[in-house]
Image (tube, one colour):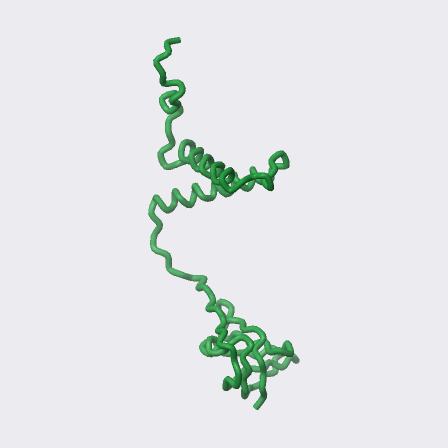
Length: 161
């Protein structure tokens, strides 16, 4: 039996069968995917392990582990990379397109050397984003408005020309 303290815990990468425990000395210990979640960061374990030689390198895989002392910090679960997403609606597609437009335009405005983003207030930035959303809706949106004077209230008055 060997005693180790888990300094960090690595979940298996996509398509891999093992994750790893990096102990306090920096040594890497392989752990099967179904056992990674049982380890605690900074927990101390008595372990048994197996070794495997591959291309001149010795790999260590934890066979059994018993918690000797721990702090209760479980490793965060990885976010799944292949989630089945339901079909997107037209509204969701339009919202995504608008978000992309607004982000790109806002980033360009902020990167412009003639603007001073450090002087902007949160209200000013929110107003700019609202303006960009309006621009998208009127020009690129699902049903852009026709360009006409009927939209401009300043032009719709009773003053004859």
